[in-house]
Image 1 (cartoon, each protein chain N blue to C red):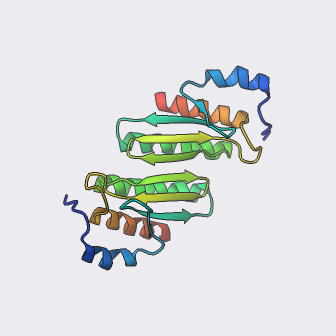
Image 2 (tube, each protein chain N blue to C red):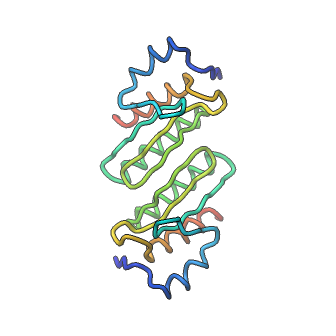
Length: 98
Length: 98
């Protein structure tokens, strides 16, 4: 699967469309905090994301405490953001709103 | 459920029995890094722990990236370590070895 770093044009086209995602300081990565109703809702979402992530063979860095999940996405092999991150971010948002 | 801070005697009796768990610097909490074979193994373990944690109504702070899970346990309501943390640590170890 292609995992080239996003070009400047791709960044400008794709990243503004990711609601609530922000650039990580000092790193070519994006971050979002998700807050759910409770732990069951938070972990239920994580379980869905885990299956999608494994399917894409692209995994998040994520921290969970109770109903909050802090997610950082970057493509380690590429050394920064690729389309894989944009796709996973979109899937995460879709699963959180479903 | 009782959630009193561990006494000095309880700490001395219980904490040394938790293999691989260490005290967190500057905080009354314990930490352990688990490394699994791959993401499926890591997240599969997290799913088992999640069910146990919810059953006990006591949840971990945990960070996952690929096959690694970093866990911190403390009882927020009590402001430090309680028997709930010892129990959850034991359950986590049991589920990791099963």
